Image 1 (cartoon, rainbow over the protein chains, first blue to last red):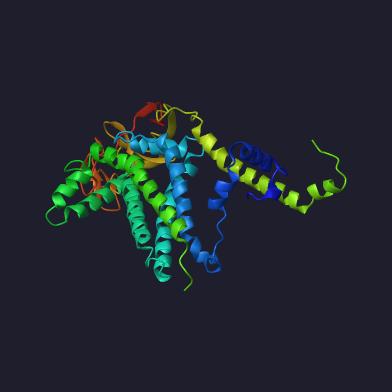
Image 2: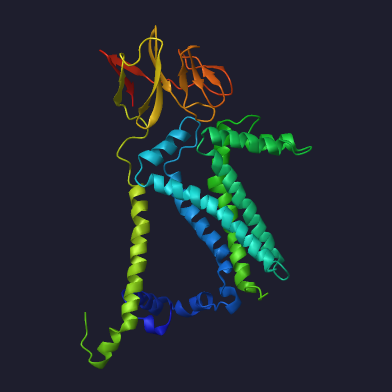
Length: 227
Length: 152
């Protein structure tokens, strides 16, 4: 990408050259961008984590877009979904992408976990990255659970009823946990705003911090050796 | 823009440069493909949020005599019309339990959801029995001569 021959030959190369003349970005960036992939890691199943990250990126972009039209109140939530699906240009596309990509992100995250397990990549010195990955998986499931309520249709309502009821069966702290999740004893407008806040404000911050740590650790420690 | 450079010229327009432009074009095309729906999405929708305010002719009083009911489609959404002695009533035909389409039970004079035997009052839409958690939302009806219109 930053090799000398590319420079000044295309428009893109000219722009990069212009920037490099001013800021001398080439050398520091080269250190990050030019990282040879070991031969054993060229197998397709080493792409599963990257695919999961791609779906996370799609979720981020489509999620921000959906937040522009979605209204997190019991009166308006479902109507705003109908608005997105029927009136907004490409709204059906953006929401369907968000929904499909959510499913695929969970699937590919799980396949990535299996790959890491089967190649023994969790072993020392990469224990902390395994833990970061598991926390990312839990965060992803929390995203899924909170996002599922947002359409505020029958399926959303009852899925959340059942999901939060399950939390209520935890010994000793169950009742407190259930009230904490629902924002009260019942599923109300408070549950909806609570889940929405978690889905678009809290969980993204947690996710970005964990993903940052996950990637930095991969770069620092390199890809695990061949089987 | 194009410099005449003899020998160098040929190399500059060689396979490498062609491929670089082809690659650049495919990046550009991908970017346009991604940005088009996003910009379209950001553009405000033509219709206002929710309230559409029209009405649609869905049936006639001949088709639905007193004591009968019928499910019609209004803008893709099913609506149940019931002709009662007191006039024509209309409700959303989507059961509030699991979104099955409800039907008119002539023998018992109630609205029935066939999936889990949810029953609704045909005058108010309220739940008589069964699992539905909420009444059927009512839909406004307008009668002009023999024609039945509902809010769309």
